[in-house]
Image 1 (cartoon, helix red, strand yellow):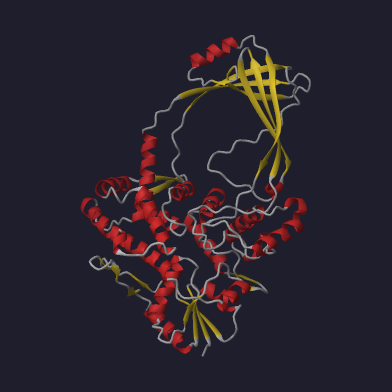
Image 2 (cartoon, helix red, strand yellow; image 1 turned 90 degrees about the vertical axis):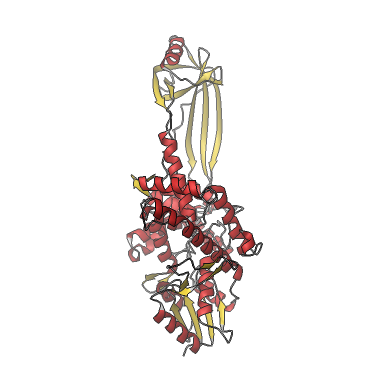
Length: 548
């Protein structure tokens, strides 16, 4: 008989935690949720304060029986499910089915599965936070009602079996709206002029771009306008008018949040959101490392905070100073966005001394890639800025202005380790310009006109859609991946060379839902509801009928 019983969601997490607790502690897994709303009916009493009707999940009977037996035998029960609303709800459902008459059940949470964090949590148990539970229930109930109202419209007008969700439908709408923007886009012609110039002394050539007339910006819209300017430039002298030299700093990106991790893993590793979250879950719950046992390698992966603990900060300092030297370290604090729940830290490695290379052999290829990304991003976030020498030159040619910029990297700083990716095609970083002097004349080797056309906005990728959902306040860290995965699986959207496009089915479904549920398929409504869920979690609002 175990003195203490610890209940977590997964066997992997159970194995990692077992190492840190004494032999009289039994650690078991609930395998996720044990109760939910029924699948066969609404399961919400709309007449009586939207009371949810929960039932035990089919197929979990034996597991529940086993959990009840373990709970009966234990003197103290700790529910150690994940440290978020979903985890709190699972804890509450477990407490309900275990019928704790002797008040043996307490709640413990930790942001990382390390010996110190787990033991500290066990020493500081608390009650289940009903506000967090209510926030999760409010979301679940609203999603069920919305789904039950919307889906029959699709069955009637399109085909049976289709379903619609509150956040998913808004995500589909964003993709359909973007596709319409692309289809309705009218390209506009514009021209650029590039002067290939040479410093007569050093013979070094560089390119200056047409800017305008007498230092005023001038856009060129046609070949006719281009030819007129070229005619004016036929006998022009290219004189250096102004030189500005300076220094530019580039700062590192903060530690990952769920959203930025998903975006960066998509850009740099080509991972889908689902794959990223699945691998991160494994790294968090524990990986077997010889002589160490099962080790939780990263902190909790569902977070919208960039805050890090003081212990992690000092471990990063020690590692950076030892590896790169004192002049590469900078103690940095990052501002978390005003809407962030900030319940736990940003995503970081749990052990600064476990460098990716040293444990590469014990990780799968994909685990190694994601761990390396998280590790390097975190370490870089505590490093000095990169420093560039910059030079901006303004050149006069018969009253027309050309401009050239150059920069050279003087100090690599954090870029030694990590550079953040972007969704745009990155421009080559220019090299330094020749050592020019004001009023000197340059030699023109050739002038190159180039016709271009404005381009429509790009289709969303998984990474840019997550960014848009976050910016518009739709969903939360835990919902981005399931939202996008669901609408792909339902064939409302498809992937075309990593870009997301609506299918014909998606367009039809979006049209029907926006016509019939204008208030719900609405970015502002969805964002407002998310903020109300946050208010319930933060004790600023109660979950009740009058809040609708």
